Image 1 (cartoon, rainbow, N blue to C red):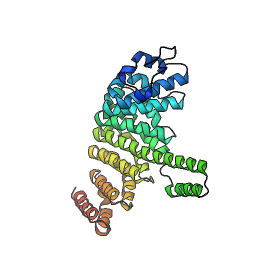
Image 2: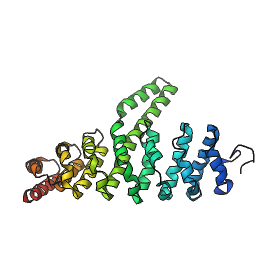
Image 3: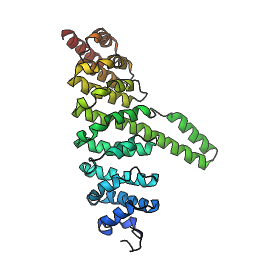
Length: 306
């Protein structure tokens, strides 16, 4: 319980915190305080409460959302953590205004982008229409962020620091490695949010075909796969719309991952890309994977008959 002092939530014990320990109005007062330390206390309470009792956090959803763009990174991070917990149980409670969440997706920080990816991933399952207005920004966030990280190089630096018994350097390098991993995972997750929107409403992404085609050259195969799946959804709905992406899709037939090659073939089929029949015949004869060869042959037959 609060100890009744003038600062909201002073004296609240986070270790034993339950919904009965806080008053919504007191939390709102903390979240709206001019003092960043008080706002941080408020969002910290919300993050703990959300993890333990998401129902209790639901009335405060808009107030927590408003703190995502706080000047204090600590405040915004705690607010993001609270929204992840809330969106897992009540995605409808955060669907009203996703602009601050998408702002998180555009951050340079991998951990911050990860929060956005998790919240949007929770919301898009039941409410893809709520995310649809932001797909252009999400595709841009994926395109503008780092594609991969040199895991071997980072691990080499970490090992060198360990060998030198340089604990501080080792900790920094380990933190850099984890941050880089978050950037990679979050951008792939954001790309999959776009896929979910496209599968619900292909028209929402039809104007982004050029941007999606550019992602087919991404170094991360997970991003390439998501771009192919998005283009596939567009092609099913409007084959002509993906015409500008046919050449980059054909280039994906040389991907090392057989699943990517198969997804490219499927997209060419839905796109009605009759000009790729000869290329598909080559794949049907030479691809290392039997399933890919069979799919290429079937798709070539289909396009030829069409």
